Length: 289
Image (cartoon, rainbow, N blue to C red):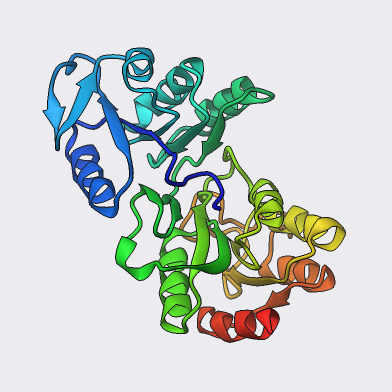
């Protein structure tokens, strides 16, 4: 079992005919993901890597039975692409695109609230259930199936930690990059809830960073509802207040959103917090024992 994506995922690639979309379509197909359709307005009828391209999402869903989409379109069109996918009834939309205006993301999240479509992202690396399906841009070779679920705001740290886990013999059930923007479709708590219910996940790694209060909300959930061990890491301990570090959401403002606050909350909730990313595998091994 896996969360969000698995062997039953029938993937539609929005923006497939662009250079990035075509490249990552090839990578996802090579991994074994069931990519059933592409979509680019005005490009319907083309074939990319053996996959048919359609002019609209609704047409692609009707013809292929797609149940999930991944978005590789420019930022100015990404919000409308997400809403088009939701209007077509897709269960999952993964938005890789970065640089979405915050107001666009706010509008999208408000319109999706209470609906059947889950948005992961924007500005995220995607989701992978090793050995089953890859819906994103992560390097597949570093992943291996196993019992550790991972959720992260940082794409780069996701890759670093996954590689370290794999090197330590710790495979992953599902890895979810939720994105580093101030407003995102799926937060830590939503993914933690899925991992808690997933029998294939025995321990969880949470990678946070400075800015916002997502990690504090995650800590509340961990302390209240998680029965599985959680190992966490919070990036940005040395970041000065008022300076944006990397992600749009990684900024300390008004004295809130500091690494110290997040570490304190996670520790109080019972999570093991690593000093360095390289410390995570040993803490996971200890938690599993």
